[in-house]
Amino acid sequence: MVQSLPVPTCPIALVVEDDAAVRDLATAVLEESDLDVIACASAEAAISVLERAGGHVALLFADVKLGAGMDGIDLATAVGRRWPDVRVVLTSGGDAKGAGRIPSRAVYMQKPWRALDVLVQAEHATMAARAA
Image 1 (cartoon, rainbow, N blue to C red):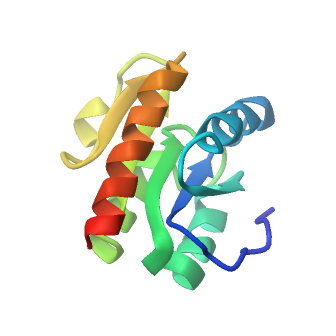
Image 2 (cartoon, rainbow, N blue to C red; image 1 turned 120 degrees about the vertical axis):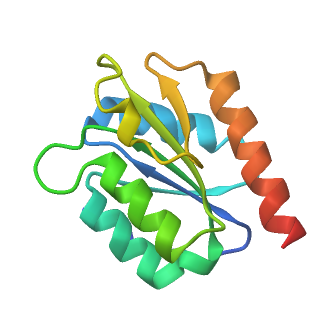
């Protein structure tokens, strides 16, 4: 399910995580940044958000494994092609299998990630968005 899009007043962080508890935690952490936050449970929902608000999305924070359908690595690759200015952070709680598939421009964070590390990435995304 995709939340309705707010009227962007500042850059957006897009959280993509199929585990609701982890999605809620990432959303809560990113709400402490200068970014508006939109959360999605699937890559397909994230693509829908990006198609409507891609110019305002500064940060994609996504799990590598997203259940059925497109995974986080495929999402990161698609975002890199269509929205190259979006900062991409991929996370995973599993081993780093498939790490070779992670796009070179993406930042990888092993779960459990630290809130401070997430906020540092949000700050980088905010600064880049404001400089553009």
